[in-house]
Image 1 (cartoon, one colour):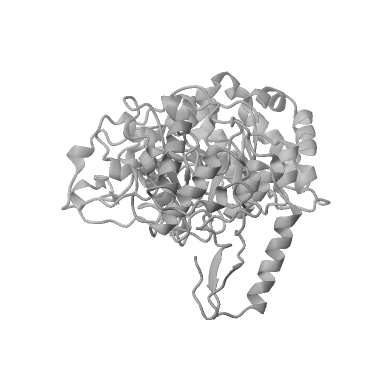
Image 2 (image 1 turned 45 degrees about the vertical axis):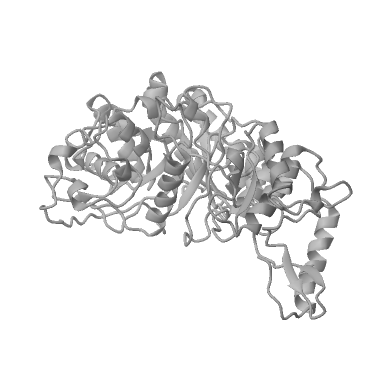
Length: 539
């Protein structure tokens, strides 16, 4: 993956709602504003970005399996790595592929180079002879170029136009070409009705860009971060407003020009963009907005970034997913919901900069969730959200001595059955403290009925929805394990099948896949048909 800058996020002049307090009102009525156009064709969706600055990143094939298990069908890549695209072809996902900023000069200076790029990076995966013609959803040329690499701005639009022409020549004009812009190109964003684009960019770059996007039916790509809006508002924006949480009417944002109420910062930012686009009188029709990045960090410097917490990240991303899938649109464009890409799939622990830069991911690099999302009913997206099937494991960053002490307690005073992690038993391998502790923690957690606090273990335990079972080691909370009591009192183990069941994620973490597990699953699935019982399953 090519290098990319998040500088646009940090330097964005998102002084949104600086006059919010003076505009609070519970007396102003709702006003409906109809608007043509929408957030693109088809139903709105939620995707994820995939950065690769991750220690021990999953191999492309393992990543494809991970995406299938999580039912993630839309991803944004920051380059067009052939190995990644080949693997994604089997995942069922559609990908926005990126052109790194350092390739803009070559593509913007030479249409022939752009044609060669399309032939090498796109045609093998989206051409007439491709077995996966729908793999590539769009091409994102550069990333936040106006702030990250302003010297490349003169060649950005020519690069976009050359790539679009090369795609059209290859009968692939259905693949849109655009560029992700930072929200900082929008000035005076609140109230949204008075927003406008940075005048130094509006006529020279943004207007020609929007005209091209309108003529080619491509979206305006934008990276929107309510997190930074709130951080830079000096306490003016309520945290709940940034997290999509309900507010009393007296605290809702009100646009004094339209009398529209805004219950969240995200919608206010989107409507500011809509107004800024409308103010330029773009010819060729409307331009839909695609949010190519948004998210919330789960950890940061406690003094500089006090709102970068797991709970806030969980709240923002969970509520964002519900917001998009419920399709409410914005106050100015009700029902016209923009699709979004959550930044990001994995914590990029190798990224430099503030502490939060390494903590935007939904998952750790080993495939375990950073926090438990609550997105039930979101169409199957993120299969890790199964609130009735959770596990307790040892936290990866916990001190090993503390993990050992917690395991000793669980297997002793905690009265947990730790037989399975003894030498010669099914969960003895791998023979290390964290693996053994994870089994002991989950045993205690399930024994306590997943009660609040039963996965704490002095801070070294963490709840996950990823099944840690592996090979013949089936964790107590696994869907693979059902405690079936026969009429004679004997216990047997059977299986319940599902699309995302099994130990796929553990295999991704350890690289271990055995024929034995395949045979075991096959035999156990047969037992569902052959065995009839009158007892309860242990779920």
